[in-house]
Image 1: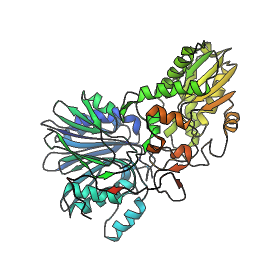
Image 2: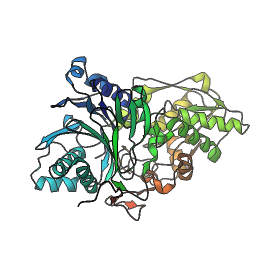
Image 3: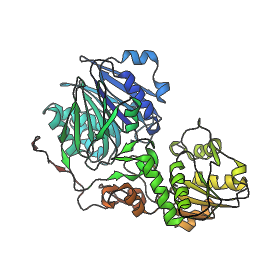
Image 4: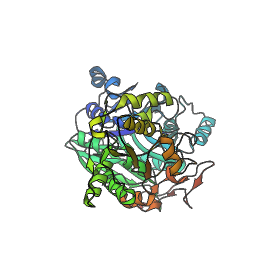
Length: 481
């Protein structure tokens, strides 16, 4: 039940939030292409519009006009958690005795089924099989007995896994980041309000200023009138579990996550890739668009070392084909590679070529790229990957497939090289990733490349001696139960 999504929350002074939310979701479209939704509040009632499809298809002018109110939350969804239909589209809304809730979730809980069963026994009726509804019902239950901050704290003590949430309780917008900080969330300031978003690119789109990242385990409550925000450190952990794959693949390169510009991180990872496993060749080609920053750093490092190597665009992308990575069937993925990329023969023919990409998951794209380049006349094709080999599934919100589908699971580098047909293959080391991102290995989630996870997951190993959050840590919010 993965939710690899984009979330946003906005509180403004005196104008409707619908259009800024809409623009923000456009900026986060890369994080989810299955459904899009906005819920606003005008001080009296909620207004909701949630539809399947891309942002531009989900909303028309009349839809935005009907979303009244200066406060709201929005969501774009990636199709890997719960049912692939409208019942799991977000934000998820619920009305209950003490008000209304709208909740947008990026991440994945590892104990959602357990909590769902408990709440069902207490009489809660569920309409979806996603874990977002579980969070909404648990929070609604706690809000019947406690104020907003304590209710959020109680819910955080119950849910385990990765989550960045934007929530609207009546007309109050808040953001929560899980205690390990696995999924990104940041705060931005606008001329007439504040915004919470998965990535800073959404803040840039609104001509706002990035204030900072939401801290792991922190609750941020935006003032209803857009005048500021309050923060509460509700949970503290000894270590974080930042997802390194956000920097490698998923986030926009112009976003800043955990104080690191993603583009710079990718260029630095490319430089490290040259230093660890550089190979002399005539030309370095990025796999567009995901490999471009890595290839740029790789080629620059090679040239700094005095190696005569050309950086060139040898593969042209059809921008009207979606990411092969998030297409649901293998047949669609295989067909989409040919639809998506076309080689420029004059850049490739008769040359030794190094292609740079961010990752190899199933191996479908890499196999077809090597074949494309050799068909176009490349004498040799060397493959360099700006991330370690992915050997295990992701339980925290990225669709990494099952172990059986992962090409590097149970195979060494030579086996994978043979399977994709490359003349050589090398991945970036885990230590290089940690060094480049400025994190200790203990503060990154590396489960997909080590098989050891920062959370308790059934039938999987953990890399943490202590996995459970320590509730407390803020004198202003007393622990109650």
